[in-house]
Image (cartoon, rainbow, N blue to C red; front, side, top):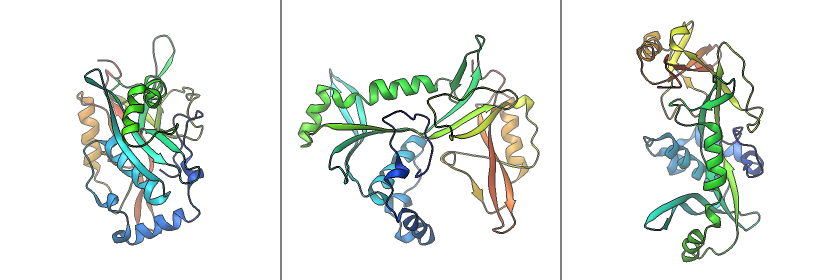
Length: 275
C-alpha cells in the first residue's frame, strides 16, 4: 500500500509514498520480523469483504505508520429518512494541522473491446466499471463533505474546519491475453497489471495457484510448490460457467526456496462480460 500506483491520478490522489516518514520501511521490517510488536489491527482475522479489509489496513497505515490522527471512520450521513452516504475517513494531518476527508477503494478491472470498438474496463462480475466507479468517487463520495447534512454531523463532532479531499484507489488492470488495448488515461502509467483470458482458450503450463480474497491485494508468495489440481479445477469450473477466477503463476526462488508470483491472470467464462 505504501508504494501502490493508483487507478485515478487526478489532483485529489493521495501520495502515500510521499507522506511516509523516513524510517517507515525500518518499522515495517521490524513488524514483519517480530509480529508481536505489530499493531493489533494486523492481528485481526480477515473480514469476509476485501474492501473492509483494505479499509482496516489503510487505517493502520495512516495512524500507526504515518502518525495521523483518525477522527472518524465510515461516518454515515443521514437525511430525508435515509442514509445519503458516508465518509470513509476523517484524519487530522499532523503536518498541516488541517482536516482531510479520504475516500479509498481497491479495484480490479478487465479491459474489453465492445462492438463499437470502445474499450470498457469491467470488474470481474461486469456490473462494476472503472469509468462509473471513478465518476461516483469524484462526483458523489468526494463531494459528501460539502453537503449541509454532512456539516451538521461534523459540527456535532466538533469538526468545523474546511475539509481537504483525498482519494486513494490502487488495484490491478487486466489486459486481454491475445489482443492489445490502450491503458485508461486516468491511471498511473506504472499501474499493476495482469491479463485475462476465456477459460476455453487457457492452457496452464507451469505452476499455478488460485488467488482467493484477500490475497488479491499484492504479489503472492508461498513456501510449498502448488498443487496442479487446484488451478486446473478452478479453470474447469469457469469453463462450466462459474464466475471469473484469479490465478497466479509461480516460480521457485533458488535462494529463498519460496515460490513467488510471476504473473496473474483472470479466467472468465464464455459469456463474460454479458449474461
